[in-house]
Length: 372
Image 1: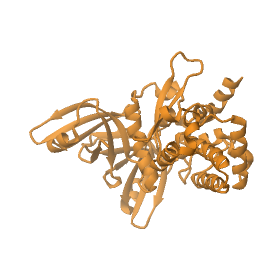
Image 2: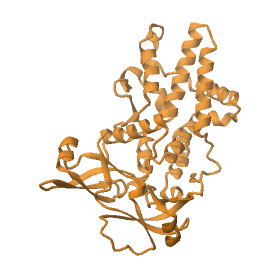
Image 3: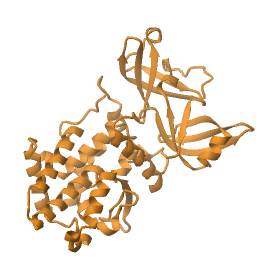
Image 4: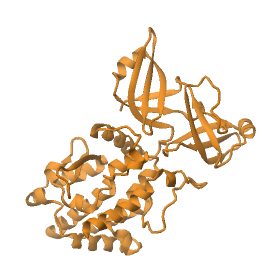
């Protein structure tokens, strides 16, 4: 019964990760969220977090403070890893949390001969909070069982904090927080297949034609988004994650071919010095970024004749008009978003509107490669 309940909860998140739902973007670029998917936005999650902090600080009794701090850390780990409630409660703080690399190792073992482990990147601030607890003598007797607290008691405290924030009680449910994290990551343009793996979900339809990524590859992808989340500045549009499939070195420059999530092949040309500095080789994980002004658009279903090596067919999901330039967002079939900036004259000539089919083009010299 418990296992069926967990599957039902996960199905709501899996539905959010479906390519079909992700491409139905409204003019504001917001995901279509199912009515039965109770979730909080980033501002509300931050308010929830602050409520927990104040609750921990409100007591002067050492034993009560320790208990509250442990529950607060459970909330924070669900909030930033998106792990299941039972997965967090079963963590061993001494073995499963790598404070040097800001990683939490999460494994789902129910009904499996071998655990399916996944490494999830967490913010540095959360690592520091956990590290302080691990080095605090007051917590020494709880370290190996830091998160082993009665689930019913933890839920009650979650509900209390939710109501203290002015939210409905059910928004304090651990799975509502997990679901909120999934939506938060999708809205930040993290590729759906990455969110899927991060959350320990398995949806064959999404992964049938995609690359298999190791835990180290996943760590690099999630680190990219963790850094972006900390800054809350950079857009993750025009970004492809993938692996190098071929390197052709010339006398001055080198052509690098990569395959990205979704099976897209990208071609880029870099200098031989960049090849040496980045230490690129076949099967290396790589991040490719393209600046919006370098992205060219072509209207229609037919693939345009062009010298651009990189050509992808998608759907216009958003149009943001300005006096001088217009920004177009084109969604590819796997949910990847590409942004293009065009002049007012080009906008009039193209006549593109939301829902139109468009081709996105950029040449091999327009791509910036990053291995961090």
